[in-house]
Length: 141
Image 1 (cartoon, one colour):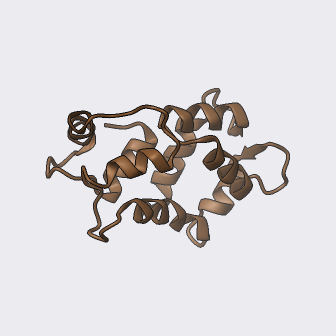
Image 2 (image 1 turned 45 degrees about the vertical axis):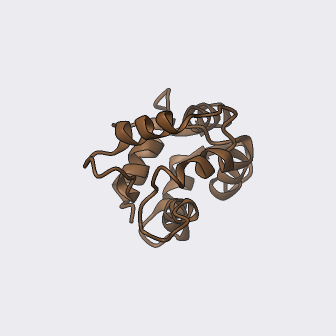
């Protein structure tokens, strides 16, 4: 499960100008760079932009990502959606569907999927755990 610091690290990664307000452009740039599609971006804004002004303040984000917030679970639910066999990991057989569902326009070969997993698989067990998934979302390696 993601802790609050991990969720705030994601906020910090998105907040390119450091003003503690996420614009739609900042959110889009961050999520598109991780191959999420525009539908997901709109869902993200709908979840976090409490006052519907097209921006997500740090306070709005903390409210949704705080210790008691339901959204704390949403990154985990996204991960579980792609963990088709319920193993607690995303493997090379589940990864192609993840890329399709997040709207990636790129076609990957099986070898490219294996390389992607190797690049993001911190403990080198050949599959992506939830913490490794969060690291990918944050852009960490």
